[in-house]
Length: 114
Length: 109
Image 1 (cartoon, rainbow over the protein chains, first blue to last red):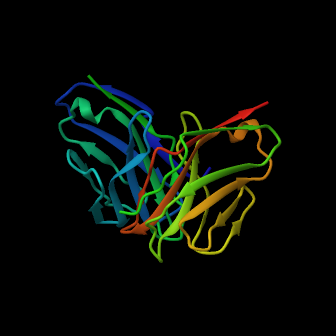
Image 2: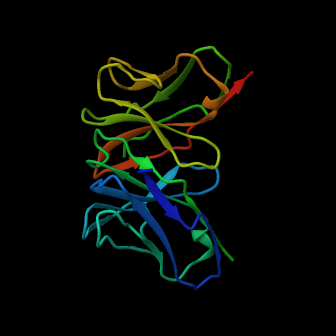
């Protein structure tokens, strides 16, 4: 089935470790997004990408790195994980940015940093 | 940044209509109003969006006030599967959707 998939679904790691969350979409959407959602709160945008090799910061980019070498993939890397980065991470895509187009979300990655 | 205000929670009976309110008094003329919902342990799901006119789709209706300072999401006949957190979001610039805490909708059988 076409869609947006995130991996892994669950991840436990230790402070200081590097961890990469994967996101893959099969719609050929130009825009992709990474959000984090902390318990009981709405989503906050970390980074977004308008196309391959084009990325930009969102509301909370510190401590995160993204890349987009291919349209369908948008990995998110925590270079040195901290406990404050424990959260649920959602990847999304849309055909033409957020204006006037819905975003389609993956099922999320639950990341725990000990 | 334009922000939205929603009630923390609402209850409704199954098979009855539900009206979810949202206030956005600082909305600008080009901000779209989006609604998403999130079921437990799932990613958000798009529901509907609009700019000035009322909108309908298979999931819901969106009623936008004439001054655009408020809007209402209408679920015409709620089912237990509609129990979720509903987010009212303004889409203002740079492709960033600013999410609030949303309204937790509880459906009673």
